[in-house]
Amino acid sequence: MASDWPLVRVEDFAEKIAMGPFGSNIKVETFVDSGIPVISGAHLRGTRVEDGDFNFVTPEHAERLKNSNVRRGDVVLTHAGNIGQVAYVPESSRYERYVISQRQFYLRCDRSKADPAFITYFFHSPEGQHKLLANASQVGVPSISRPSSNLKEIEVALPPLQEQREIANFLGAIDDRIDNLRQTNATLEAIAQALFKSWFVDFDPVRAKAEGREPEGMEAASAALFPSEFEDSELGPIPKGWRPVAFGDVATLSKGTINPMSSPEQEFQHYSLPAFDASQLPLTELGEAIKSNKTPVPPGAVLVSKLNPHIPRVWYVGDTGPHAVCSTEFLVWMPKPDFGNAFLYTLAASPAFNTAMRQLVTGTSNSHQRVRPAQLAEVRAAVISDDALAAFEAIVAPMLGRVVHNRRRTATLAEARDTLLPRLISGKLRLPEAHGAIEGVGA
Image 1 (cartoon, rainbow, N blue to C red):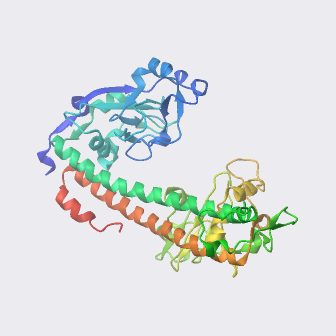
Image 2 (image 1 turned 60 degrees about the horizontal axis):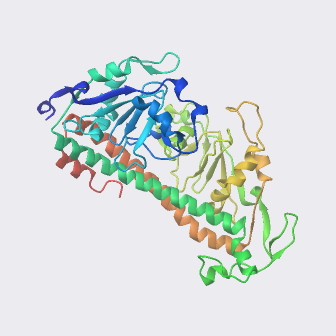
C-alpha cells in the first residue's frame, strides 16, 4: 500500500533544477527559421512535450542559454501564466535539445532513483498539483513563488524504480491510445476537407478528364460522375451541367429557445464554446446549472459559432439526445432536403468559408466580433451536381461518424486514466487491478 513507499523530497532525486532564461534573452528578435526549438506552453498540453510548430534560436544563442537547455527525459514545468503545466521530453522526441521559455523551469531526474514519466504523472495527480501550486499567487499574472526552491521541498511517495516505470508505462499506454484516436480524427478531417475542395472547389476530376487523364485515386464509377468539360458562368468556368450554390441553398437556420432552469432536475447535453474547445463533446449538466436560455440542437445539426470567426468553431454533432442545447453564440444549421450534413459540415468548416465569415463580421473588438446569419446565407459556397453530392455524402458521412465515435472513446479513456492515476501514483491501487479496470474501456 501507499505506506510501503518512502516519502522522498524532490531534491533527493534531482540531478538538476533550473529556471528558464530572462525575457530579454529570448524574444522575437532572437528567433530564426531553424536551429534549437523553444518550448512554449502550447507544447505542454499533456504529460509529454509535444513536437509541433516551434520558434527557433541559433545553436550559438542556445549555448549562451545553456542553463535553460533541456534534453530527452527532462521534466518541464510552468511557473507563470498557465501554471500547473508539467510535461517531460520523451525519448522519441524529434530534437535532442530544446530551450525552455522564460515562464518555465525544469527538473532533471537522477534516473537511477526516479523515472521522469512517473514524476510527471505524479504532478498531474490532484496531490501533485496541490503541492506544486501550494505557493501560487493569482494576483496579476498567476505565478508560483520561488519555484525552484519550492519544487525541491516537495515530497513524493516513491516506489522502487521498476515499479515507477511500470506505472508510467501503463498510464502512457492509455495516453498513446488517446493520441492515436486524436491523430486518426485529424487525418479523417483532413481527408474530408481535401475531398470537398478537390471535387467542389478545384474540380480536379473534371480538369483531369478535360486533359484526357484519369482522375487520380478514383474508381471508374466515381469518375463517371464528373463531366469532361467546363462551361462559362458568373463565377467563371464551372463543370458542364453543374450549378453554383450559396450557403442558404444548402442549410436552414434552426431556431427556438429553451430555458434549462425551468427543468432544474433534467439532464441536458450542453454544447458550449468551452466544451468545443476542450473536446468537441457536449457536457451533461442539470438544468439548474445552465443559467441562461439556449438553442435546441436536433440530430444531424452543424453548429457554427458566430462569435469571433477568426477562431473557427464548426461542430459536427452527429446523433443527439432529446435534451440537447447549445450556446446562443452558435448558429444551428440543418441541411436542406437535397443535401446531407457531411457536405454541410465540410463546407462550413472549409478555409474559404471561414474567410468569407471573417469578412462579414460586425463589431470592432476582437473579443466581440459576430456574424449575422442572413449574411452567411448569401455566401457563394460551392459548385455541385446531385450525383457527385450523393457520392461525396456516401464517402464522407461514415468518416465523420467515426470522428464523433472516436471523440467519445477518447473521453472515456481520459476519464478512466484520470480516475486511475491518483490511486496508482499513491499506491492505493496496484497494476494488476488497474489492468482489469481498464480492460474494454474505450472500445
